[in-house]
Amino acid sequence: MANAVGAAVNYALSERELEQFQRDGFIGPFDVYGPEEMERALQAMRPKLIDSRQGVYHQGDALSGTTNLASYDRHLDVDFLARHITRPEIVDRVTSVLGADALCWRTEFFPKYPGDEGTDWHQADNFANVGKHPQIVWPQDASFGGALTVWTAFTDSTLDNGCLQFIPGSHKTMNYDENKVIEYDADRINQSVKNGVRRGFYGYDYRQLQKDPNWSPDESKAESMVMRQGQAIMFWSTLMHASHPHSGLTDQMRLGFTARYVPTPVRVYPYQDTLAEYGVEVSLEKWGCVLVSGKDEFGHNRFVDRTVNGTPFEVR
Image (cartoon, rainbow, N blue to C red; front, side, top):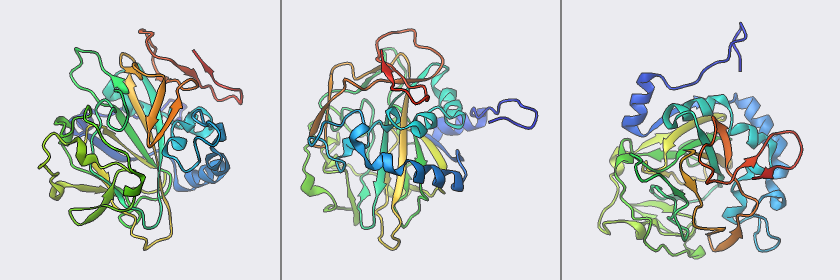
């Protein structure tokens, strides 16, 4: 985007905004698209999203379109999403925190349909939580871990249809041990009630990872993140976050899209060549990081050249 005299707009966080982010663990919502622009884009790419056969994890009948992994990393085959993860409204803010050299290592869709349960309170540091291995590993001398998550509202996100919830400031203490075993059970989906609220975690019980089995989050401090279509919010993956249930009072699906960013010294999937989650295991052969800013001087991650030009991407 450019202003009236042609100069590029800089969306970097101000000193005050950076202080707020460091204190609270999140910033936003902020505008990325107008509602009409977002709706046009969503309608245009809907046929591609429904057809997961072009996704990098599609393996015939082994991975159905209803499996969570089918919603991963669609920026690697959908041009609009490839452009989205490099939008200056997002990347300028990301690099304000991570520094100039940054990559996107994962994207995910989070649909919520009428009657769906809310997402349970959780944190993610190395993302080993529902898999077999740490998925991101920071250098040993790093002062913090986790990933920056940018959650974009592809539809309106309201109290009725299941908007996000955050506990401000909770990103500084991990309440979960991601090295513990967490068991997948599809029968848990939409069947759990916690503290009087219908909450679950896609077939997992996130409480199995608690360091203290008797601990529970202080929901009195929670804030609801109501967002209009086309807005985004940026937060640390280590921030305690959840979502409300979809009340069913509206027939509108809530659709969020997350992009996850780390600086280039971070190793991504260093101990695995497959991804095993939600009862499915798929190959990472076609997966790669996308460099969204700066350069990579480390050479320990695989990258995808995802230039939006209508030609297949290349992994290197």
